[in-house]
Image 1 (cartoon, rainbow, N blue to C red):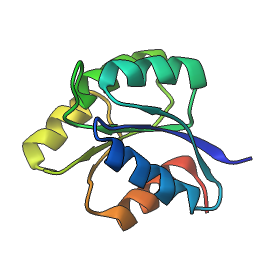
Image 2: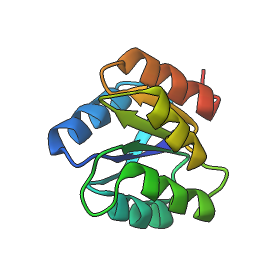
Image 3: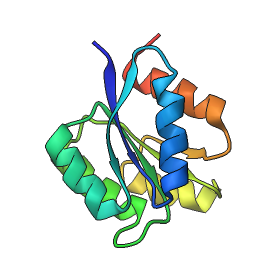
Image 4: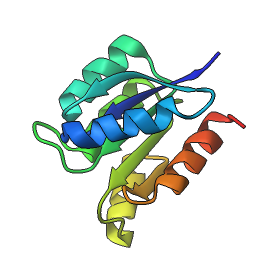
Length: 122
């Protein structure tokens, strides 16, 4: 059975690119999408994904605040924070919100590798 991923990004273009990326990967499916942090929380509650990818900067609620709430609801679900600016201070803030990995949006190969590692998918 394929592992289910929730993708949250305020850019429809970025969401679609991530969905195409995961659709091309064996064993991975996107089960839901969200355009902001609050919608990500709602979609996580409804779809119970195996992994969540959150953009850092989103309207309504950012990825770090959404991660805090999602981890309270679903503590065993890994979360990857995707950002244009992966900096040490940001990583510390993200890890404080129980984000599992912080990855630059531009590093697609690392995003796939970390997704597979967190989901134990070969």
